[in-house]
Image (tube, rainbow over all chains, first blue to last red; front, side, top):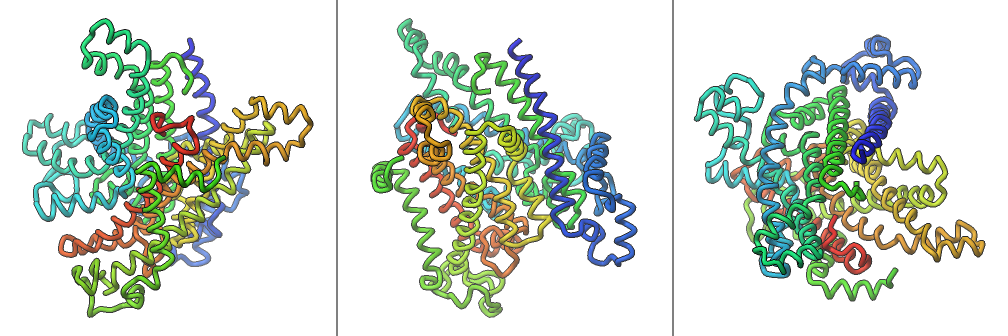
Amino acid sequence: MRILALVAKRLFWFVPTAAGLIAVVFFISRVIPSDPVALIAGETASRAQIEVLRTKLGLDRPLPVQLVDYYRQLLKGDLGTSLFTTRPVADDLFARLPATIELTVAAMLIAVSIGIPLGVISATRRNSGIDHGLRIASVAGLAIASFWLALILQLLFSMKLGVLPLQGRIAGFPPRAVTGFMTIDALIAGRADRFWSALAHLALPAITLAVPALATIVRFTRAGVLDTLGRPFVDYQRATGIPRALIVWKYVLRNALTSTVTQIGLLFGILLAGAVVIETVFQWPGIGTYAFEAILHSDYAAVMGFTVYAGGIFMLVNLLVDVVHGLIDPRGGTA
Amino acid sequence: MKSVPTTLRQLMRDRSAALGFFLVVLVVVAAILAPWISPHPEAVWDMNPANRLKPPSRTWLFGTDRMGADIFSRVLFGARITLMIALVAVGASLLIGVPIGLWAGWSEWWIGEALMRVSDVFLAVPQIVLAIAIAQTLGPSIENVILALSVTYWPWFARLVYAEVRALKRETFIEAAIALGVPPRRIVLQHVLPNVASPIIVRASIGMGFTILTAASLGFLGLGAPPPAPEWGRMISESREFLPETWWYALAPGVAIFIVVMGFNLLGDGLRDVLDPRLRRSHDR
């Protein structure tokens, strides 16, 4: 029942927060620029063309009316039309979503599968050389500009050593799209060579995105395990002679991971919202690259559509994280 | 709130905090003294085709860029831009966020609550997403980067101060002050504010590192200071078309970002240990 109450409370706040976010995006797009229509029409448009466009887009009406219209339009799933691709922004984003999801899942798999064991080791060998090394590394991992790391990895592994592809998603023709995930589609098509090509293309961007996530997960896991190790039940289990490894990896870890799980959720949300910079560096054809191209072409509707999408997906993931948190830690409290 | 000398002495005792402090001081000194210590102050902005894309040597410590400018000198001058952006943006966020948090937390008036809901909206989106949207709308310039970063960062301070003030209100010494009839304004400024100063300082230090990374990302995307300005993010972005031959082009600005962000993060962690014993490192955030 507590879970239901929590979900109800979160859902209750979800709607006004989403509405607020949309109002902020509306403000950025319609109120900040001195003449949004001139911005949309571009530099070559004449005065008369701008006025025609203004009436056509309904931007000659009062702002509150426009805001209501904007809500109505978004409720229909319409994020506007991209001036550059001339397609609905929602369609563009939807087509690019699988690439972003594939990259996000790959990066998080790396970060979680390495980060949690490292965090546990760091905590159980507190103040040892390994612990100090890992703590320095995790602070460093959060201090590196990820786009710079991306360039260095490209320079090293693609340009100098030539072992991994520089950018893109696959070499040659992609397999027939079934799921939209290049690696899985290649397996479905039974093409091992395509699969390895897709995986190799995935490696560098996924590693780049995994680094800050990894650092965060190590820090939180370490803190959680240290906290749990001090609880009385651990002393009890030790006294009963349960092997230390079993205590740590089974009983302590389960209790220690609540805040780590929250962080993993947040990191997922951030990456799904589109890793604009990293996707661009690797020419990864996902949401992030789309946003960057929209910026480059001053494709105003696309930038705003992307902002609404990114905010929406991040809020949704947060909502899910809160629910999951409530499920694994029924005591509530931090949620 | 501890005095500044005490805080500094305790900071220096912690090795990683001392390192953070040293790195921050290093970058600040480099920024202030840039015109005097840079070996080629004349080759920061000017076109110099003869010296184009020279590898690191004794004359050009970190090599030269596509304009023939000295990368070492540009990185030194870039420290000014970076620190200025981060200082103004974090300062503005403090000036907006702290009073709102204090007021909303203390008064519990509906307008304060409404402002906190507004801050929730900003916290509900990754900062870089809204910053990109704002910077894109306003056009590329340093001022607009600062504006975009301030508008998206103040809610962090408002949220933090709000939560602290709400908790403090239930403390006995505050209740006593209310019972004695001390005017609310005096309670908030003389008793509440000093008690929330520590978490604010810690958040500001970590916020400096965070803001520098976001600002560099905006610069990298072409939304920052326009070309001849020696902005680190843009320098790295420029270097891309000359890889892999000119490997040195991206190296120095990237290392500079790393040093300054690492400095502020270590300093923030150290300050948290010294100023706020409740939030020791085991309860990381």
